[in-house]
Image (cartoon, rainbow, N blue to C red; front, side, top):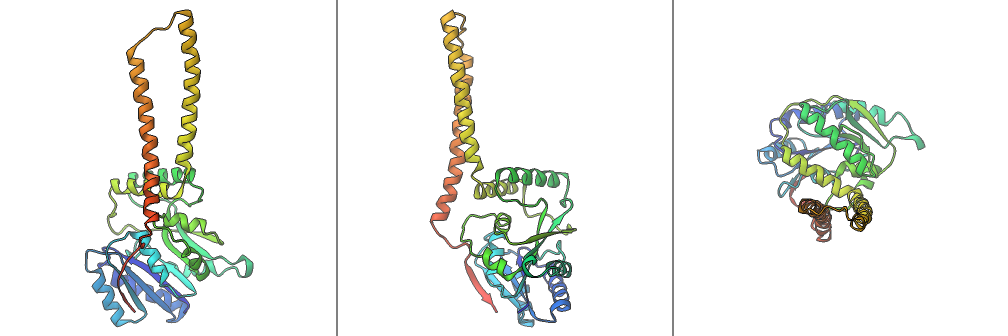
Length: 308
């Protein structure tokens, strides 16, 4: 099989029919029917599953993976990739904000070079993030902070859509992590990757509230970087050094009798260092929580039923 198209479904019922038709048209133009479409129902609360199963009954090239509940976008994508059999794998969101017709542009870029210079992955990036000013500013801040804290080089304004060779997908599936940030895994897997500029549309409101976005950003950093632990260590050493210098100064003040005693300074110092301790313990707790999740070895997803 030449091509596998993988997409996840969550509140996708209004878009599934058009998404299917456009994917078939784009794939037929390149591979003359030699393709499959894998739709992963990530516990969608609407009737996305029934629409997807209806497509499967009409066209056996459509496979439907029904998860037992909502496991999250990243885990659902990895679940879909496990079932991809094509020589090329086209990962895309089903909400039509990312266009199935990009397939030809991605394929032409992927196959420009051959031999040792062959490109293994073509992925899309936006010039600017979609959404209002807050969406754009918060996205830019996240990518800058993540780039600073993480060893992975993740492009800013990255979108889901990417065309991958099977060897890259096989390597990506070697990761057996329970807590992961899929864009980080895409980056550290290596291979020859190339970006392409795309214009992502805005067809619906985001399913992520500000609190959920903040929690997700924190999750990504904790899952993919130990830099916060190093920063806490360095900050603690810096405070210790400053405290030692201050202690010497206090001794001299006592010797020369010019030291002015005062409770406010003591209270401020106690509160300051107490806050630092709680902050450090909190960050360590987050890492311990991720370790706790990993060592339990629970499955990333549970399959309710597989159609096709």
